Length: 275
Ligand code: C2E
Ligand code: CA
Ligand code: CA
Ligand code: CA
Image (cartoon, rainbow, N blue to C red; front, side, top):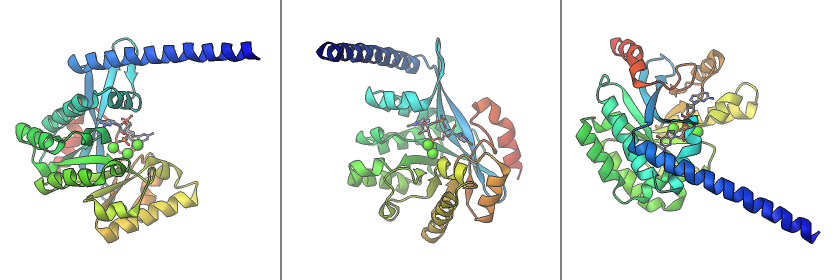
């Protein structure tokens, strides 16, 4: 038994080594990707639920590894957070997104995701405001998407940062609502303009009565707090119909459009600006 135990231990050790090494390689490649501009930002339409008008786009970072091909942000964002690359990566996405959005019609906003790790940096608000100034994008056309996990760490500091941005005119959106440590007191305490109902509720809404009830409750909550509600991950016309019946404010999902390179937004931008 002793022998077997030791063998298992060695096996784990070896496996850990492989994983650590693998991570180090990926970290090195991500560093290089940033330096060599291998990263891209794609944009997914955000639409008015009732009329379908496009109100803006969410910026989503993309990485195509020269050897491994596309790597999901679900994989490399946490890595960037752990190895200290999230600040330069986040700043790069912010500059890219604001530069692109500055060329869009002036009724289209851009929503940029912020990782909680970026809020640990004291100058975050100042840096974002500097990017706005540099790119000429008006503050009210930038929306920041933050998640509930951000609000647990150091709520006073986060609140102070969000307030500076909010006073400058930037909008704040609470992402993935319902999946984290949701506390309704957050909605009172933090200056949110929008709540995004997580895709998991939308994908279940037709099969699971509880998901539908939660969506209905969040929409009602948004109405009474005057916070707009976006439903994420809308993939079918029947989901859209239900959300329209419930008077949801905004929708996002493959039904309306997948994330696209900025070169492919042309049609969506011109249709939208003609209305
Ligand atoms: P998220 O912020 O919740 O973004 C929405 C994700 O859902 C995106 O995945 C989008 O492509 C996907 N999606 C949108 N509509 C649909 C749909 O109808 N069906 C399905 N199945 N999926 C849909 P993506 O681009 O892979 O991003 C995953 C996550 O990575 C994001 O989730 C966000 O948390 C993070 N992320 C992406 N870009 C950035 C970034 O620039 N900065 C930071 N900090 N995080 C980012
Ligand atoms: Ca988001
Ligand atoms: Ca989300
Ligand atoms: Ca999500």
